[in-house]
Image (cartoon, rainbow, N blue to C red; front, side):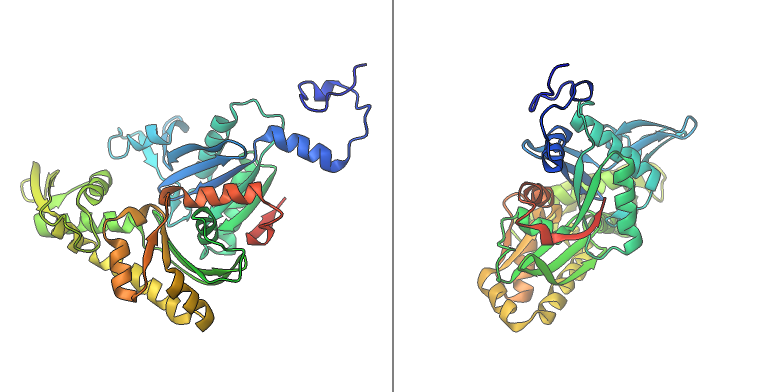
Length: 368
């Protein structure tokens, strides 16, 4: 019988192993074919980093389901386009809320779809997965993430707190005895953390982030203009005319289409950028207060480092115009925006995969 090939491994299960293979070599061989991955399992978007290939998938965390047949019709971008536009028997579900799994079965289905999409059905072994999760989740919520990933096909799951992953992805020296402050504003949660020596010195997680900013715009349009708008419309307004601080776009106007409460008919209303900023003032104040509280609790030596180095903003919320200026104005500390704020968490999980031994202490929980 032919000897077992050492590298190609196409017929590994059909060959006789004639060369001594240590357990480490076997694990390493199968790991190579399993395409180990890092996942940013976000409320708004899911991103996947594959070892050796980089970011290979970025899709909305949405699943469209046929309620009659109990089968998924679409996942990701295709499902997001269905939000608010489905017939009665079809629902578009976001399985994560406030950074944690709200619908376990749908989250598992979504993970399976993304893993299958990345692997193309050609891997010989199940992947090891590193997943970024909010630092404020409970033990039960952590277990739910691990269980969903294991049932979706992972052979081993490591969890890493999102602020740690975001800091690594933003290029902060988290492995050194230097104080680093990261503010990761995602879709469902805002993570504020002070890091040093691969660990979280202190952190705060508030369930106010991008979704709440959009909801505040929806509420404002309803109260002030008697106009009912959907989630996607509110998000478009936030992107087109939203700001956290006066930054030179106050003359910008945006047309908003929705359903007028009094007449019950579709109507278009024109609003200015300052109105959008006013509508988001309350959730923005919650985020700023979380940053202030964290700074107040920071040990003096680390606080001095933060004053010297500044605060790093990551996550989709970092793209809101003037947010860095608002936080800097309220704290008196310079604020930087990460080079790729949307990708920081998934890039951090990827770096951990690539340098597992050097960053082994960053994992917050283990399984498998």
